[in-house]
Image 1 (cartoon, rainbow, N blue to C red):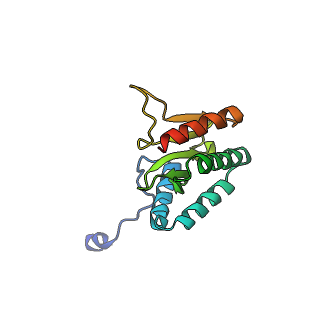
Image 2 (image 1 turned 180 degrees about the vertical axis):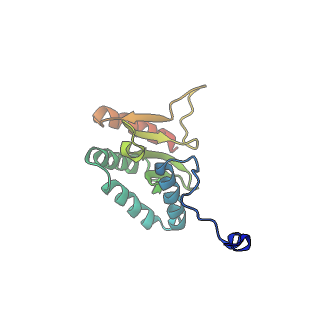
Image 3 (image 1 turned 90 degrees about the vertical axis):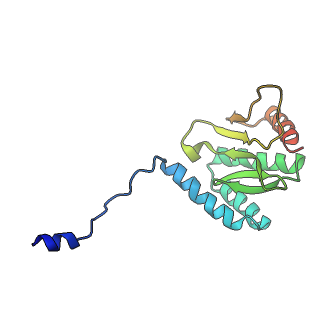
Length: 153
């Protein structure tokens, strides 16, 4: 081959450059794009929440359903939606107040029930914004209900 022919060859790209994100993080970003497309349709968003819950492992599904029931009971003004592929609940401005993260989503040892900065949980100079969940008993239900009610005010 002549040097001229070599210059015309296109480089072969065999792998994408590592973006620094894990496969789970990339999947969550893709979920966010889908969520933004359906954000205007509340029925579609709630349907998506139920689909995400249904796809969870048994113990995660039980907890996510219970959290959904609690949020709907104590803060019906919060709208169910998915957020990075997780069940979440947003205020009237569309800002996520609280969310449930299944342990299997990121391969961690416990589920998380978390609150975002728009939650009204401020308590002095320091307060909890996320809670590890391994089981929801009546005691946890009471605590979750109180936190959601306070966060959504």
